[in-house]
Picture 1 (cartoon, rainbow, N blue to C red):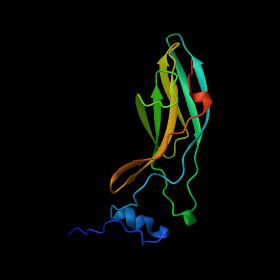
Picture 2 (cartoon, rainbow, N blue to C red):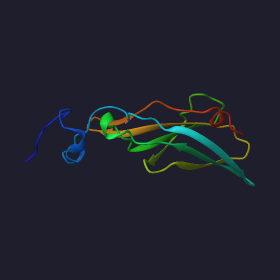
Picture 3 (tube, one colour):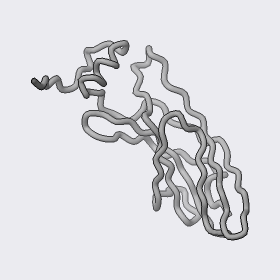
Picture 4 (tube, rainbow, N blue to C red):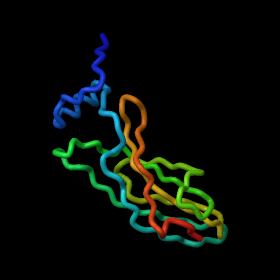
Length: 136
């Protein structure tokens, strides 16, 4: 027997487990965005390895939490403020990511939080810092 419950905004936040059990989650992107923190590059013989790091904290329960289920790392092989040529997904527990690129390749990165809802994947706004743009 299936129960069609639709969106249940009337359920209090402490019953989010019931929402998940029933397969229903509020619609919308995560209520908090990750904050890009740093990038470090290790130069190799044929490739560079970029280590991207960011910070993220879940919203407090009284804020009607829309916690992130993970992060999308956007990459572009150019000097751009809107990378999006390549997308990598991570889980919400990850706070750093390694990207291997050919030596000397100019690249840019951005990050956004995502969450699953009963209407699909909801992605927040892309965040980028100057150090993540035009990396060589």
